[in-house]
Amino acid sequence: MKLTYEGIKDADKWEEKGIKLPKYDINAVKKRTADNPVWIHFGAGNIFRGFIAGLQDELLNKGLADRGIIAADTFDYEIIDKIYRPFDNLTLFVGLLPDGNTRSNVIASVTEALRADCKDVCSYERLREIFVQKSLQIISFTITEKGYSLKNIDGGLLPVVESDIENGPDAPNHAMSIVTALLYERYKNGSMPVALVSMDNCSHNGDKLKESILFIAKEWHKRGFVDKEYIDYLNDEDKISFPWSMIDKITPRPAKVIEDMLYDNEIEDMAPITTSKNTFIAPFVNAEIPQYLVIEDRFPNGRPELSQAGVYFTDRKTVNDTERMKVTTCLNPLHTALAVFGCLLGYESISAEMQDEDLKKLVENIGYKEGIPVVTDPGIINPMDFIKEVIDERLPNPFVPDMPQRIATDTSQKVPVRFGETIKAYIASPKLSVKDLVYIPLAIAGWLRYLMGIDDNGLSMNLSPDPMLDELCERLSGIEFGKPDTIGDKLKDILSNESLFATNLCEAGIAGKIEEMFKEMIAAPKAVRNTLHRYVNT
Image (tube, rainbow, N blue to C red):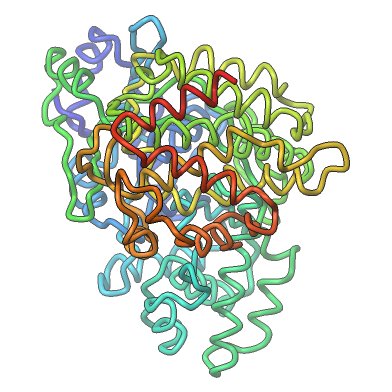
């Protein structure tokens, strides 16, 4: 059994294995999408394949849509070459139930997969064709927080962005430059409306996307590459919208147990690959069943009826409240805290960490004690119900093989949102004192301790990829494990960085607390465990 158009023709075999197949005519959907595309998505990784593509697949199965999604990737083209094209853009989704059972189906809503690379002439020309189609309604993104970033930790432009600005829209390389250039094609071909929807875990993600695109467009205008009317087009909300959204679904790395299960079911070629850019990905996606997507309902050219697949469409305030609930309080901060301490303490799964009494208390305290007091109930999802599901059901699910090492990736890009927003809320509150925070400072201190690359036994450990890793490690250089006095004032440059924490922690009055916690954690082997245990039990 092969995961290809030809391979799934023998429907009875797949159904015998408990794997549901698409009910719609895949080739007809593919042709309609090619001729009149409605949706293109940038970021071809697992959250897209296992969640977003699945939404459109559900609509197709219900007869509520007649076209699919075109996928593009701006970062890791091997995903397109090795995971999409050999499998006819199909994905085998395996839902992981808490009782150890699985629920599987083939997703066929992705009809085309493109390398968003200006050096790939065919793919890039196809992107231009898609962007000038009147039918295009949605341009969506799951490119992670760093995909929108144009500047480094010191506020200077990234070299690739600087080059794109100087060279203009003909041969862009950064994701934001590519999209800005393609939107310029849409503008030149009739200024047609479209919605650009970030589905990444960023606070006010629509604004981040808009700011990056406008920045590049304005710099191109200064250099004479684009006209002023193009800037007006990007600013016209009747033409171009940047809705805010909140997305939530834990989608871990491909699990060996799932790979083996698929082979036992006689499904071929399911082995994961590691790309040259260190993406670990497989033809299948394993993920938890719970999922949430809340989107601000601003679509100037219409949209698919995704509410029929469980998506919430609402106003900006409700999206903001829901996103803050999840990203700054009820899930993402807990995940990041587990990630850094899990790496330090030698854990290899999030679910195993939740069996650790100290770590469970840590996330309960971050969520219930420090986060919930600054959450506004969004009305559509109850915060206490949500966080209870996270702590009691989702994170402990032993069949969701998520690793702290994966969650620790790009932590520098996550900290401003996952911890910084709650810190800012405490600063702004007339009833709460930021100096009363304990567990969020402990998590930040744990992250800085993690950046030393030494585990709690005093042994060297690998650090997960992060765009600021070299710079942060350099700033910590000279601090010696077992010698707290070597810290000096080395942490102050980091803790005072507003870009990193969304506020100056020194001015906020909690930098000293973080420094003391950090000192405790570098004092000796097992100091991380001892420090963690002491604080979560006081």
